[in-house]
Length: 623
Image (cartoon, rainbow, N blue to C red; front, side, top):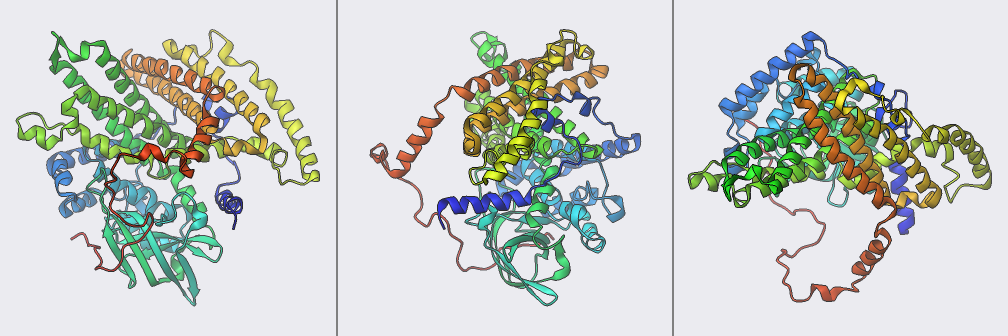
């Protein structure tokens, strides 16, 4: 099969898996179309008093438990979450936060699921990963959304009381390209027989239940599999740059027999189930990122006041002060994005597939920058481990660990590059619906003619709306006080963003999907606009209790974001993308192999892609 044919096949698989219809409004979708629908997110949907009380009670209980029973330094040192900690969290209901009370869970809103993960993520990111992988992409979420009543009654109570679940999609040769999936599930009477190898199975080493994606014929299906089924072998537990406490493994399936009743949904719906699950499942990552960033504010404030150099507190030096300002404003914005998206998920009146993806992209990128700046503010102490600091008599601040732990967030549940492409596809859906065949080089003459008529009607209505809007009125959004000017900027810029997208489609037509750097900048602009909106909405609400302080944080964030947006717009059309792509091709060809001269490669020899051979299963049961 040619490279073009392989690409087309992968693209078709992905296209078939995505939700095709928009039955509910989407703030982010309209934002990319130049339609700033503030009414969809302001006022932010509110929870009932009863749900709020239960959520607050749980977060307080969780905080007490973490403080009294969890030693994050021990988890980092031993690379393992103690069994008694897992059991204690299970007793609190932490493994069933969003599972309804009917099935034995706490039935809390997503807002409080996020607040719980903010708390855990600030204290022990590995523990947050254990809880989120179980609930966001493990068995509970797909069963809640697509399971039969029998499946819900069989599996959800078990998950709620602490039987750990894992999600198995990735394979040694399959990352973001599901068309290459090699694991198979063959029907045999009332059972399916599974064969294959899964990589990076977070929680897989200790899981009781697995969600497994496998190929049934030409399509992909999802199954719930008991982890102790004969034929399943956890080949090894992987170790990483950070998150040393996570139980992540390589799992092999050899003639594993799974009851047909464990099929989730229908045959061929596996990828759609996975993508739909992630619409809300991705909310766990922004929450963890918010916890990381909020912790960074605390350390930056304390250290900035404590350390004195050249006769002044380091936080008073402008070079450090600008970093502290970035950390604080960014932390407030990430929390705002996380909370707004969580509230929209609870409200269920909006389609949040783009919002959740934007939240994940924005939070993972910006929180990493904030932690990197914290390490810089801390200087040599930022690079030193907490254990080493404590051993020589200083406060054991785990800045370097938090930076290492957070790095994976830009890869987990869709790398930033894949997220940008996915968001782009959803954001330009209206254009493709109107003019898809017009820019499709494989479309027939008749299809192009019909598409031209549709496109003409669509753009005749749409393009005039991008000329002027509420953002041009100096009194618009006055209810937001000092933040009104930033919302006017968002409204004006959303129209500019839509025009830029249209220009890109006009210029490159069917080649646009390959202009990934251009599309990535389009998405990054949209993410900044979404964050600016979220932080203004949060500040306006918080000001009722906190006065001007939230406005000050939001104003600083918006000023920083506006400069990033301006730079991204500049790079849409003035960049080195073309020469960079050409240079990369030359690098791959070996044209510049002379650059590699004079070095030694410390890599351990072996195939680039492989699987472990032999050995005993390393799966362990939480006791």
